[in-house]
Image 1 (cartoon, protein in one colour):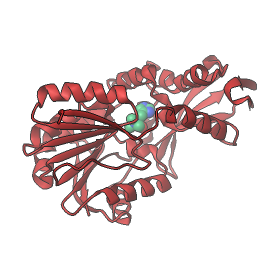
Image 2: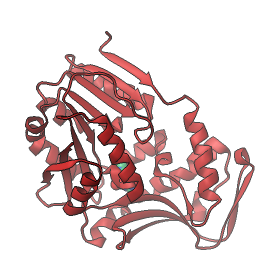
Image 3: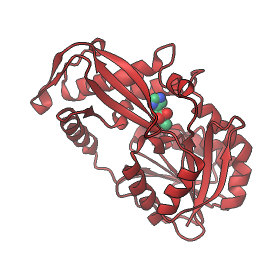
Length: 319
Ligand code: AVJ
């Protein structure tokens, strides 16, 4: 058995079809909205890596601090022999876990990007030749089936990416994760925490404008893939704190009335002056809320670890 197997459950043309559907649905409705997954073409992924190093963007540093301090506790509590990582574009965080999980036999990175999987998988294999790597090209929100690897499994969903899901989507996601777990398996979940509005908004509207470029990049993705003629200079980057829902919203706000054509969809999209296109929700959590959402999916919160400043949390939960 080759130590590095790649299985694709996502049809190769799924991405193109999904983009067309999302753009048609999201830009034909009011308020306009696009799912954040379209940020991450090669340029968007490079901009996100830059965001993780910005002084204002604390989540990555905070989660790394927890992983460095608590990887042994995670390993002790999970006893995992398989690590499944959902959204393994940035497997740098995985290294802390792989180092601590000394009984580990298999690593199952799951991502929609085959290139990210190959890049991460091959570099991890160099440091951990003892592992069997089963990379899955799949969308973890739809129809995930895990390979048969030694249990117990630890499923890791890090980075706070669960915050991109709206509450109903989170409930469905956690229920689908629960359906993957057998007794003795565990979920390691990274969640950014509620904090003061100034800190939160700054993390999504940095002084250097990297997040603004990241946000506007979705217009370039639609331009390249669907021939849309959006001009990024016609939009302002907006980051706002929705205190009622306790989430950050990123939006692109039309500076003046405009019409963009999307030839591949035979669509013309009109914006009024000041009209917003919502491009991302990034929910922030409280311990009790995480406990309740996990419990609703049949998962018991067993450990809650935060960084020293209490900015971010890792939860370990199980059926
Ligand atoms: C990768 C989804 C966790 O929501 O903080 C960073 C993406 N958006 N800056 C987040 C993001 C704007 C990030 N996640």
